[in-house]
Length: 175
Image 1: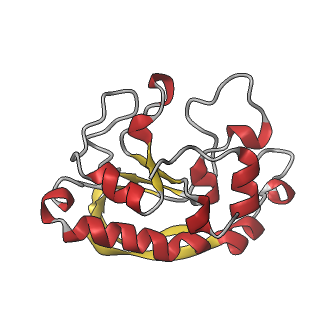
Image 2 (image 1 turned 120 degrees about the vertical axis):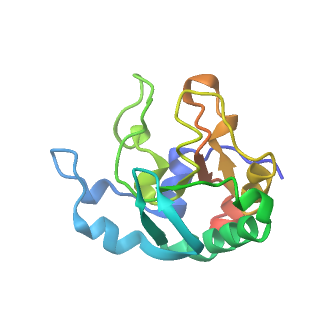
Image 3 (image 1 turned 90 degrees about the vertical axis):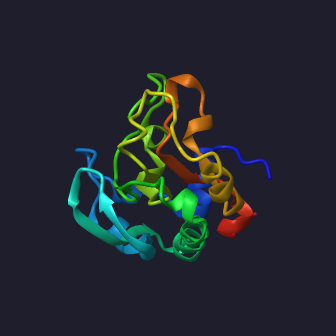
């Protein structure tokens, strides 16, 4: 299966357009979260990347991705060798811009897939942004089989080894 980053048009069609919920200050109103958020159960508790004393058992993700994300993570968990290398959980939903957006992008084009709750960060401590990815070699393939594109394959400027984002429109129900 060959995955690619979705275009802004594809993302908005499949996952919704946050524009009506964005204020003049750039913040998003609670209506956006009410429209898109669901909760995916993690197959086992995971330490939170920025506070490893907190164990996470579920995450906010886009409501249409709940089952898909649960299946992907259950498959990772079923491979004990791979799961043992996923040391922490860095989050799924956060309404924000991409950390390294291109200067010629504007508006919604600057938003991270996390703003649609359609990306998840795993094994954050071993994969800081800007460094060579350091994930188990089978992890990207497992996630890809469930429609998640690995940020470790992005061009060097945007490479992000912790990041996996929804990228298969057929699995999202959009055609």
